[in-house]
Each structure stands twice: as C-alpha cells, then as structure tokens.
Image (cartoon, rainbow, N blue to C red):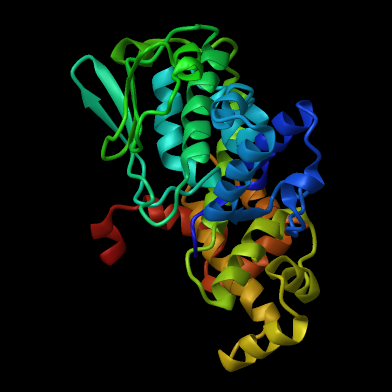
Length: 338
C-alpha cells in the first residue's frame, strides 16, 4: 500500500484554510475526498499535493508552518488522546514512535535517537515527491503539540530541512526560535533531553488505557498488503466493534463493486463469512494475549453482542475456551511442551 495520511490529520489543513477564507471546493478542485469520514485515509502524495496547492492559492510560502501551529489533539485521532494523557513528554514520544502510522505513514520510517544533550526525531525525505509544505506542517505540528500538552513555550534545539533555504526565514524564526539547517540529508527535529522528564498538564491514566486499546486495534487494522483481500481484512478489523459488517459495506469502503469482492473471495476459495471468521480469530488471539483486556472487552471489540457467543466461537476456532487459552499462554514453555 502507498503511504497514507489519516483524514483527521488532514482536517487540520482544511480547518486552517477555512479560517482564512479558502473554500474546500476550491482547494479540492474536484478531487473525490470525503472530509466527513474521520476513519478514511488518503495517499501521502495526495495530501502533499493539497498542501502545495493551498500554499499557491493563499500566496503563503510558509503555509505548512501556519497550519501546523494550529494543531490540536483531535487532529491526531485516537493517538492524540493517548499522547495527551501520558505522564511525561518522554512517554508521549514512546507512544508516538509506536502508533505514528495511525496518523501518517512516513516513507523510510521514523526514528528517535539520543544525540548529546538532545533527543532527535528523524525522518528521511521522499526522494520521489516534493513534500515541503507537508513536511513543514509535520514539524510545526509536532512542536505545537508538545507546547500544548505541557504548557511550556520552549524552543527546540535544532531543525533540519532537506531543501535549500527560502528567501526569508521570518516565519521559521517565529515558529521555532532555534538553529535552522537547510540542504540536510533528512528532516530532523532536536529537542533538549531534559524535556523528556517534563510532566503533561492533566494526564488521565484511565482515559489513556482506554485509548491505547483502541489505538492497538486501529494499528492492527491498517492495510499491510496491496491485494483486495488484505484490504478487505483491514476494513473488517476496523469495523467489527461498530456493528454488523456486511459485504456491501466493505466493498464500498474499498471503492469496488460487491461482485468484484465476491469474485476475489471465490478465486481464493473463501467466502465473506469465512473472511470475517478469519479476522475475528486472529484478533481474538491478539486481544486475549493482552492482559489489560478482559474477555468482555475482547468480545466487544470483535463485534459479539454477548460474551457467551464469543466463547462459543472461540471454542469452535481453537478447541479452547478464552479462559483456557489465556491460562495456556501463562504456562512456562516447558510445561506446555510436556
């Protein structure tokens, strides 16, 4: 699958451009994008095109910085609520590293490394596509979010960009107030190591636990293959807890016809009900392996109306009850083997 961006994250661009009087239709220029579907995603390249187009239409060379400055936790979706309820900024970076793909998948990966008295967030650029405005939005959003959740208006240590310095640095200086380096091999954001110990304003551990469960579910649901059935599995996984999942609904989410999906299923010797069973079985084992989830939690996330129905299905899949499965996981390997 191509790198993708969540619609919630992209919504930050539209929130900013609307506030400056730019109509959605003019920015979209006929592109079929459903801005109301917070669960939807678009390609990273398409998101980058929208940022570049907005910068041209608004005559704003630093639009990405301005849009990033207005970021809020809701623009990060579930991940935003996980991050804002951590105890320290260091903890937020740990979760950002794990769940960042829920917001935007970055080509070449994303890393956090120690460098002297700083922590460096690093990402290699996409050599095939110019993404200056989107890249600057990502950097500005990251700093703005840190300031928002800590209440501390500090400045990073250094920012690296992979393109030549623009004609004016006024917007950059106001936003970052730190050393700026251009023509670098990758994007980097360096912050003081001491920031990792900085407490967040109002962390809620109960809320964080609930949001972590949802973040894990969504991470598992991200497409990991480019064939129709892989994508269908991902849609099913992300929809189970929302109510009944039907063939027409999944086909619609994939932007294909129901007959096309049926043909793919038949060609692979499967059925739609069988595919749902496969997804539920895989996720059930993952959820039961997580000690923070109860059997009731797992049943709910898998779309079962009653715990007893989940227990019967799990026994049919594995020959074990959910409780027996968990007890087996807790046994030492030598005991399992014996």
